[in-house]
Image (tube, rainbow, N blue to C red):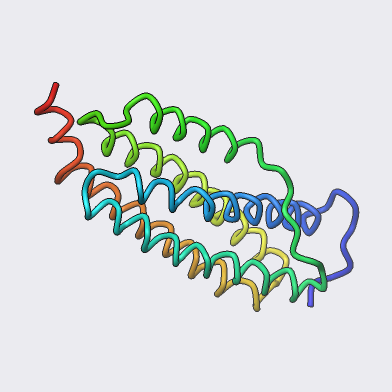
Length: 169
């Protein structure tokens, strides 16, 4: 168990980061079905659905970490993810039924993944410093899944969505 939390110390930063990513994961969980439904290609739709299922696991892992810390799982408004998701919603609206929609959705989804990858990487570094051995495998598994989702999105963009957008231009 970590040492007693000190105000404005590393553990406080860690807990704030957990709250931030918990909020983000819950928002993403609500957004992924919309992306899956809007995607023009079956492969992209399936990728969003697969990541929705993974995101449910991400939320559960975060809840386990909150439990390890003896805290209630609560989110903290994350303006960064709100802004990234708002940009994605704009793409969805502006490119609805357009050939470039899937390319735009891939790009928007990768912005989300890159934010999550950065956040989980930081949380892992802090958990290591704090000696939170039980939290580390949970955070590392999620980071691995986020990185795999990003790689899958890159492949879908390069192999399909970007070419379709270009051909229609």
